[in-house]
Amino acid sequence: MVEIELKARVDDPHKTKAVISSFARYIKTFDKEDVYWLPRERTSALPASGIRIRRETDYIENDSCISQRIARTWVTYKTKEIRDCIEVNNEKEFSISEDDNEKPFEELLTAFGLQLGVCKHKTGWAWLSEEENPPIVIELSEVAGLGYFVELEILSECNDKKTVSAMRRRLLACLGKTGVGEDKIESRYYTDMLREKADTV
Image 1 (cartoon, helix red, strand yellow):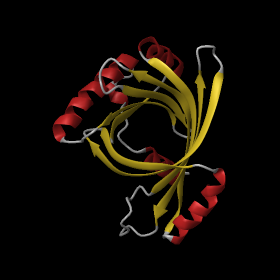
Image 2 (cartoon, one colour; image 1 turned 180 degrees about the vertical axis):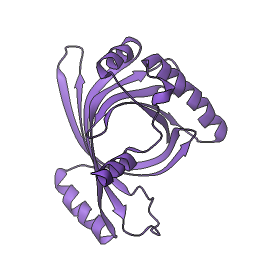
Image 3 (spheres, one colour; image 1 turned 90 degrees about the vertical axis):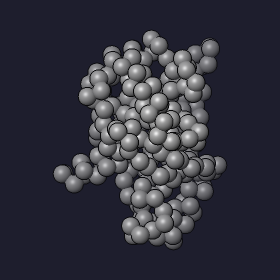
Image 4 (tube, helix red, strand yellow; image 1 turned 30 degrees about the horizontal axis):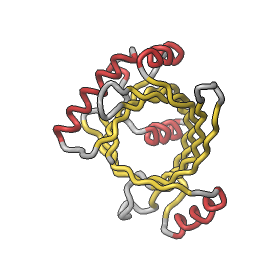
């Protein structure tokens, strides 16, 4: 599956959260801690974005308002592309079933010539807008060091020009419903923004 998505900066997260809750179905609260392992050499066959290890904890409430905690560790690599401020990502991922497997996996990445790179921490809320198929996943999150963002994502079977154009129109329409203006769209990747911030410190 291909991720077609956009993100935009949010000035008033409490207001935006209320607006999203008025039209989309709440799914969960989440905490995502990402560590990126990057190729030492740009000539590597691996994507320049490297390999991401994500420790993700989801809190899901059932009909009785009882919160269920689900913790997982994901390994992800993807090819990334920006098309007219829209991210088109071909993502591959698998889970590490036991926490004890993470350290030997990191040792394997080191042996393959990767090195520890950028770290990213996101906390927030997720909803599903199911008015059309495929649905749009909406996340409102605080990215440590960068502030609040709304992220809109559609999973698609293909990423041809016609499909991406149609999905872009849907994403922009959904962004309008959140009350966040198109002038707030951020086309840079979080990892690039974090690197730029680190370079200015």
